Length: 214
Image 1 (cartoon, rainbow, N blue to C red):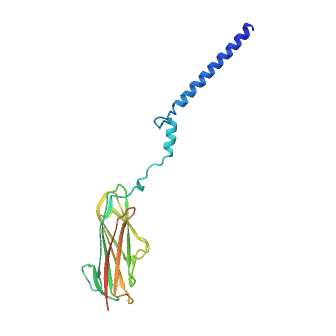
Image 2: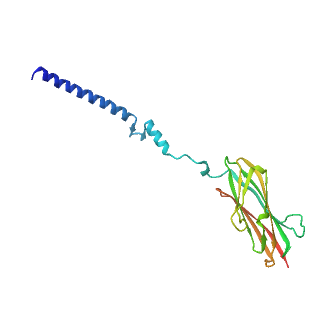
Image 3: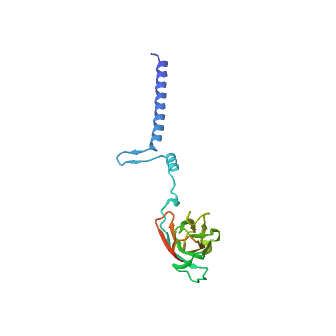
């Protein structure tokens, strides 16, 4: 073998060794960012892989958290005889068929959450009383601390919603409505209200009664 052939072969071997060295260094750089420690069970990701995984993890939604800082302080139901000009509301009053009774619901609510909370107020009234729901009155104190969303058919229907602003205490809500006792009414009538915290377990009820005279 002459000198020229030996030189060419040596040059080829040198080039191959350089290529292998370059590829080995690149492989080490790529795998160093994905270090897997089997003994400790830890797994280290590259910065690009961490960004990709963080994008796939859903962020916690505060509205999904259980409600613990809102509660019902009071519900009180009462009634009076408007036809007889009865001044004070009572738990039970006497009334005749054809006369008009006025019912009152008094609520005291608190919301210490950092978000709005909703209470649902349902009302159940025995048959025999005709109520004009367009004449129902609402009063909130303080005025801007709560809003009321009333459905079209509230009594014996869907509950109305009372939405409290964050960080409010002792918000007073008053509901007034009147109804005429019909000729076919029973001798004893019940009106029940139920208030419930949406997203919480608290629920309270109260009742008022009409003794229908002959």
